[in-house]
Image 1 (cartoon, rainbow, N blue to C red):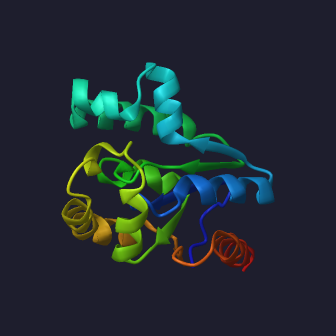
Image 2: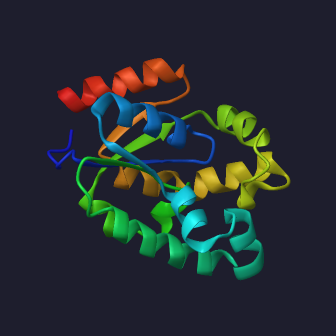
Length: 168
């Protein structure tokens, strides 16, 4: 268990792991401000994430994401729901936060991601692309995580497990 300051919490994990839902519920319980990084990027740019990927490319999106994360990570009493790929370019920045990895089985992630058509990296051939992303990112997620929580169960249990771990 990490001894990091827990007033800045980032929720990390694969697309479909429940970062936004869990982050929002956790922020209510802790009475922290909730920030959905992708939502903030959409507000700031006036574009949907999918449009940024399509019109400007992933590299441009990652630069915007890094700038937004740098701006948000200095706030206290905040929970930031990151994008699934935020970890790729922001390992150093994420050292400033307490990082909770929501772990799900690959089969659960594929089912969940198949229902959401707004994921630019998973717009077609979801199963194969999810497997590739999972294998590409799992070691980095584990390296960055201060706490790993099974998010395959129900949401209420996941939030309860996080709260219990934060208290210990």
